Image (cartoon, rainbow, N blue to C red):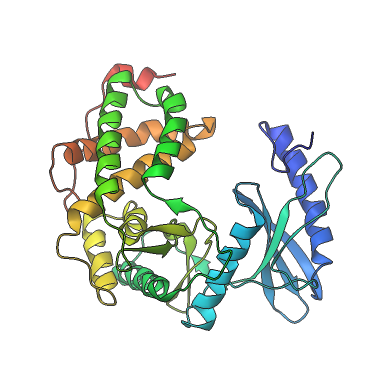
Length: 347
C-alpha cells in the first residue's frame, strides 16, 4: 500500500517529509525551462512551497500539493487565476506551464509514497501585511475583494472545471472534526452553546438563495497574511482554498481579524466597487460566526494551537451569545465573557 506523500504525525516525520520534498522540488524543476540559481524553502501547510530565483531575476513559487486536492482541482485554480490576470487585469499569482505543456503534473518520489502533484506560479513581489494595518490598507483590502468578486461574476467555467464548495455541507464536515476535539479547549456547557450556534448557522445558510450577485468563486482565505503590498498597492496571494461560496462568506473571513471600526472601513472600500444588498448585515454576521467556528475546527487537532484556542474563547463565546440572542454585533465592541476557573483546567 502506498503511503500519502504528506504523511507525518511527529516532528521526526515532518523532518522526513521535508527531506522528501526537497528531493521532489529539485526533480520537478527539471520539468521547466528555467535557468534557476536559488531554491529556498518557504513553508509547509496544505502545500509545501519553495521560492525559486533565476539568472534573469524572475522569481517563482514551486508548490508540492497534498492529496486534499486532485490534479483537476489544482489546474482549475490556475485557470481561474490566469483569467483574473489576463482578462480582468488583476495582479495575482499565475501559473507556469511545464515542458510537457501542463500546469500540473505528478512527480516521482521515494519508493512507497504516492506521487505528489506539482505546480509553479509566478512570484508576486512585496511584503506581507504585519503589525497594525492602516485605515487606508483596510479600505483597499475591501476594494480588492470587491474587484475579485466582480471578476468572479463574469467568469465562465470551462469544461472539467472543479473547485471545492464552501457552504453548509462543508461546514457540517468541519464540525464533525470539532466534535472529536472540542474538549481540548471547551467545557461541556460551552460546547452546548457552540452546538446551538451550529444548528442555527446550518438553518440560516441553507435559506440563503444562490444567484450571480451573491455567489461564485471566492478566495475563501483572504486574511492579512494572504495580502502583500508593494509600493502602496495591495495584492492577494495563496488561492489554494479558493472555491465556490457566498461573497459574504469571503468577506466574513477577512473581517474576523479586524476591529469594529476597521470592519466599517473595509465595507466602505468594498461598496466603492460593488454594492451590497440593503439587509446584508444579519447574513454577514451568520457567516462571521460560521467562519470563526471553522477556524477552530481546523486548528483543534493541533496540540500546539490549544493554548491559543483557550485564550480566544472569552471573545468567541461572547460573539456566539450575541448571535444567538439576535443582537447585531459586527460594528460594536463586544465585552469578553468572564471565564470560570474550571474552564482553564480543560485537558
